[in-house]
Image (cartoon, rainbow, N blue to C red):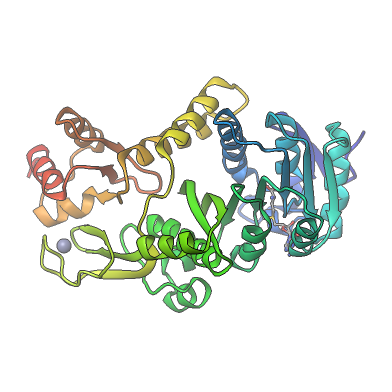
Length: 397
Ligand SMILES: C[S@@+](CC[C@H](N)C(=O)[O-])C[C@H]1O[C@@H](n2cnc3c(N)ncnc32)[C@H](O)[C@@H]1O
Ligand SMILES: [Zn+2]
């Protein structure tokens, strides 16, 4: 089977996929612009898809049944087809896109990969498909939501139509609003009061989880974050969804709260009430109210994901780097990063090597690691004054 003209065959994971010829959709600076192509395929999201495969397999290892999957915004079909080919246990992948061209290519790609017995491609608004499957009592184990920009308009359908105990995976590429770059948009779209700060990519992850929790609670469901991270221009969150009226109230009262952050020294606090004054340097803090303050994932699951990626050689080395970083971060506990350059500024000293700080903290018995997204940040369960002491002792002047 051949790709149509203006398409080329690429390999991603175990799948062979016809995608728009990237040479035809390049900006004047030579960079491929996937949104210009007739069907969206972004090679920069390979790690995102790799991780979804490894994560579903990690869930299967833990006894989770992932028979029925919805790839609700499938575009070229790459994610759904990879799930059909690479995730043990899958019986049926419903692949949906609202765009006619995408559905044509996804159907061709299903044929090319010989997964017609497992994959059903349909043109629809994914909310229509999800509610129809719910009405037909399909038991949906996993729903993937991967839109352009904000996933907010699709959240209720995904959370409502996945089965009790099922998993929803969501990408949000509207990182700037989620981070609080446009506070009014953050409030309007996600119901959170906040603004950008030194660790706002990490807060963006929590803002998305908070939004998912509040939508879930509205329909008498709870969410349990299984695996969350930010990378490049997006946030990705996986949650387990369960039914439960009082549990959903309990989730909101326990897990929705405030992050206070000092944009001068990098002090952070996760709590129920804002702390308006930084206890380290005395400056006023930035407060993000209505965000998620509980755990953002399972350290155990993250370890299994990392070991799966390590064992199997069809994942990229970048994916391994990312999942190992996420596993260390989630292993530290319910924390936020410290920006070491902020601490160096407070101390008026040079910034020591991140590696040296991490090693020093570990020697003292603390957990510590680098984090994604900031070259100068670490995560640790050590108190901030300990980090300040170490930065001070390691920096020259
Ligand atoms: C970012 S792309 C998805 C990428 C794909 N999941 C992947 O991994 O390559 C978003 C897709 O969602 C489709 N879309 C937008 N609104 C939709 C809706 N309401 N229902 C279903 N598909 C939709 C678009 O046509 C587009 O193909
Ligand atoms: Zn401060």
